[in-house]
Length: 176
Image 1 (cartoon, rainbow, N blue to C red):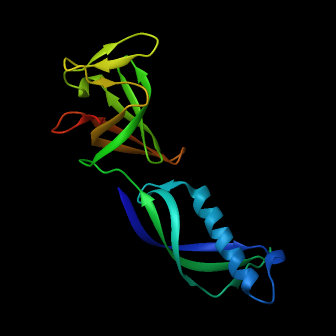
Image 2: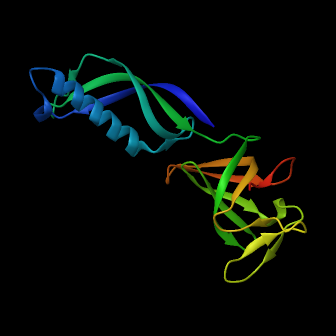
Image 3: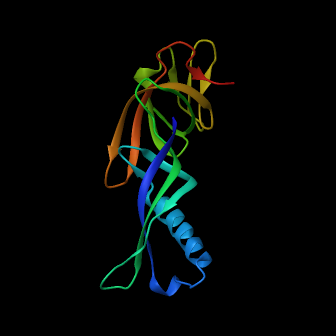
């Protein structure tokens, strides 16, 4: 799910980037904010950071004593992405294993659909392995699959989420 959030942030501008006109300063603050935002990747509470949409406020800068850099408190709106239990999403299969498949959905790379959560599907090994059911519906590499989220897990060290999903429910499965 995409969320619009309002966030406070501290932007540090090196002293050599300062200019008496102020235009370069505002530009430096925006560029640094975008760089910091992109490098943060995700948080447990908000999910994956995707985009800064609106810069609402740039506070008064404070000089840092030992470095001479200036710290500006800023407030902005941004877009984040997070999966929630019970949410129905579509993902693209990128890896097929004997015991299930891994999907991608937005910035999430590790969404696991276990073979035990695919009723009526059976594994068909080969050069391009797939899961197949009696109606010849196929789940293989690059297939788009509609699933329901069972659980998510936050990994602090990698700064990413993992999710467990299922096909058990109405209107779930491969999307043609």
